[in-house]
Amino acid sequence: KKLVGPHIMRCSALVWALVPCDAVQVQVPYGLAAVHASNSSFTRKCDHYKTCENVFGAMEAWRYAYNNARKALAFATKKTHEHIHVREELRQLGRALHEFHLHPNRHAFEEVSSAGRILFDHYHDVLTGENATIDVEESAGIGVDFREQSANIPFKGGNAKDQFVTLSNGVKMPLVGFGTWELTGQKCYETVRWALGIGYRKLDTAQVFGNEKILGKAIKDAGLKRKDLFISTKLSNFWEHSDEAYARQHFEEQLEALGTDYIDLYMLHAPSKDPAKLKLGWSTIEALYKEGKVKAIGVSNYSPEQLKQLFDIATIKPQVLQNKFSVYHPGEHDIKDTSILQYAKEHKIHVVAYSVGNAWPYFLDPLEDPHVLAVAERVKRTPYQVLQRHALQMGVSTLTRSSVRERALENKKLFDFKLSNVEMQLLNGLITLSTSVDETVFGPKFCADIYKLGGQPRAQRAEL
Image (cartoon, rainbow, N blue to C red; front, side, top):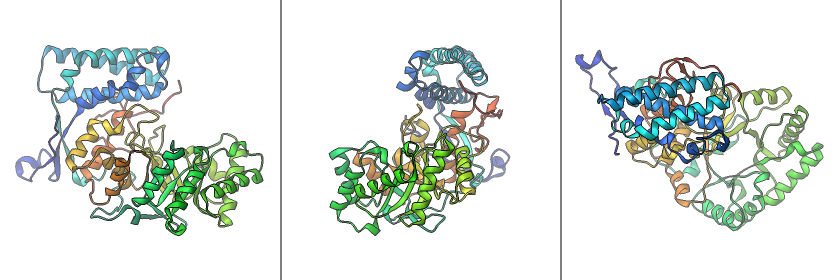
């Protein structure tokens, strides 16, 4: 269904009492989003506990389906017998979700799956029959408590290779980079050569990717000056190293494979539960930084708690945190009431976002989400461009990772448009639809209740 764009209401005595003067009326596809979440192949694989590979991913999808469905029903103008049945089935699903929130066990999981499947297999036509219209205030910021407005990102044109962020130590890093996860062999070589040819100047890899030597050859054959490139890689298996000398050996092998004598950004690829191994890995990176062999240092896949552990043993704090980022998980897997973006900002750590358009490791696919598609329609851009631009305006830099060249080309057109405060609120509010348990438990606290879900702040998730 084609979704009509927002209409700005003009001030008058009649509307002033109803909505603020700068309110924008926006059609919201609650019903389509509910059915989309319930009907994904990932969600259907989790209809039964034994076949579900990610229980909490399934519950997130069902929360998203439920919250969208109850808003779709609230805005429905038709009042048929089917609507009455939907309301009752929604109550059943809401009770089951609340029970799982309190007691995450197999029985509660099966209750949610059963109630959800009955509701959406039988009544999806009722839920998708109408679109809702909500009022969003342009002056209300972008919908998060740690950033009043979007980051100051160019939007009147410009090449992606000319856009940089300055890290806390003064190093300039491209805002948009090219990731190489899962790229190997000749395909990796050809893709990287092509990416460099169209203007990408930041390449991201890792020891465990097994493609550093191929990247080195692609870089050499491209004939670019080393100073014009920004190479980031990672120490992936530092927990296996017995001492610093062994870790350094691996670093030297990485330099040789990449065909360079320094690395622009060197990171620990993942946290270690062993404090001694963590200290070994980070002290090695600190030493390389002091020697000038790496220009900036960072970590990847770290939570705020893991960053605190790192700070306890570090003499130099990381300048970069590279984490999974999506509209449902902006920077961390386990959503807290304080955003990791705020925590990183307080410690002068710049966040790099990867897999912005990827559902992994959960179930909700942002590229196919009707809410994202609606915003893309309004701004006349692709869903991928919208998600990348959203991340940039949240103050993080991004990596694109795709062997599909059209996707990589989309990233070259991120600096000639801008998402409005209204569109940023709509996107930032999606996390409340996936995190809030029901009408009684709202989360996370750092997001505004743009979709008027109501409820009290949620408690932290219990373990299954």
